Image 1: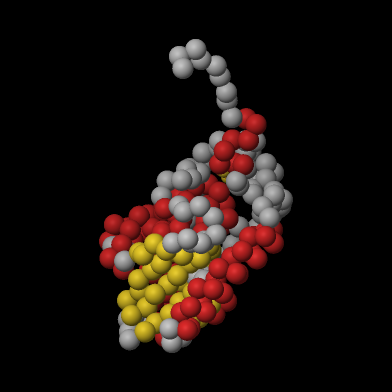
Image 2 (image 1 turned 180 degrees about the vertical axis):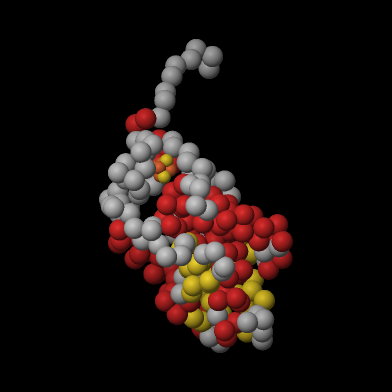
Length: 217
Ligand code: SF4
């Protein structure tokens, strides 16, 4: 049985697809934010985590080595774990790489899959959080980069503007509310969700997607 958390806890990757509109079901993030992760069953993943980890580590190591060869000090993964405590929730994350040079910071996230706007938002959430969460980065202005196998996308600090912070704040307020957030079941989105039917009574399966016929094309 799902156990209520003492304080809502939100992992940054639960927010990214919601913020860019790739996902619509806020209830999944609301449920995770408000319940201890180890207290409820999860749908087993078909994702090949081992293969992903191997590819991710290879690209991460290559990016880090190139930056160090340029004389930069680079902090990686677990060194970058943070929890940012607000008045209503804890926001947590673990950026792949952080480097600071002459008072200018860069946070990088490495992606081995297809590019997605949610990757930019993930980096923007790190750019927002890091100077607040880490004592040593107080006052540092961060730019961001999403690094893919064949190119990298630059994310300027100016992207983390009042509109972005307002959208983030509004989403978090919906996720920490005692009223459950909006639930939007669909065969596609439920197919990527690990919350079982025991906790989400409206869960649909991928095969539940309606299909029809037409002679119009
Ligand atoms: S199973 Fe579907 S409806 Fe339920 S929380 Fe997950 S995405 Fe939302």
